[in-house]
Image (cartoon, rainbow, N blue to C red):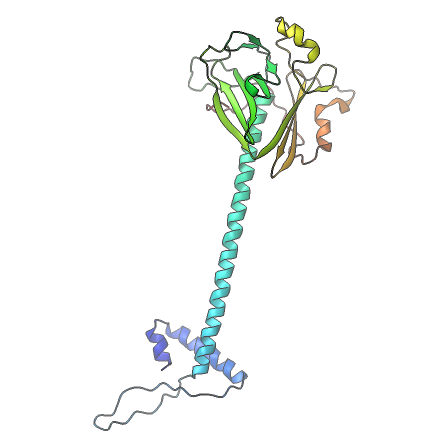
Length: 300
């Protein structure tokens, strides 16, 4: 038997029972439904008489209760769908923000390294002199160079210069660095993953003739570099192109320590071609130079 006492026994508050019952009555009257009376009776009997007491006047019908249950189910379903939609949107937004954060961190690491390239040749594990900047590098790397600004907050017995190499392995940009510049035969580099989901990576260098070349030292200077001269040559600018699976083509042009801007001809600025680069996300790289960035002690 359905009644207000039954709903109250199920844990419904009195105010909520009254509101639902009133709403159902209004709806049933507006629909002109036939009132199937399912009155709530009090199951008490008169002492010794065996007769029921009269029906309560404020009871409600079975149809009214069914309409109330349907309305409550519809409201609950709508609230659940709204909650799940908001939750999925929050998860998707968080994933995008995490990917952007990783991408920005990788850009900061690359800029810190490239903006602080310095003229310091080194010797490899075999004792052979290597240029300050070499592309392609040894061991399958596409670029190897010496950078400055390696902070030493712990006052360790090492230089503030650092030898760094970059490679593309399994769609990941890998950064290698050596604790010492002139390496011993058993020197092993430290491996760090800078960026993932990378399809390709290309680097170009701006020589003294204001031309872009894909190798360094330039071909005409390879013989002099092999004989011990020109090992400290550094290009005036460097262009790095990264093709990312999600972000597309990202181009960054970095002026190096030998760059001299031409005040009479602003078109000679190496950053001008950034305006025509597709998918450019950093059209104006910060003009920082050697050794004044906030590097950390983990190799950056």
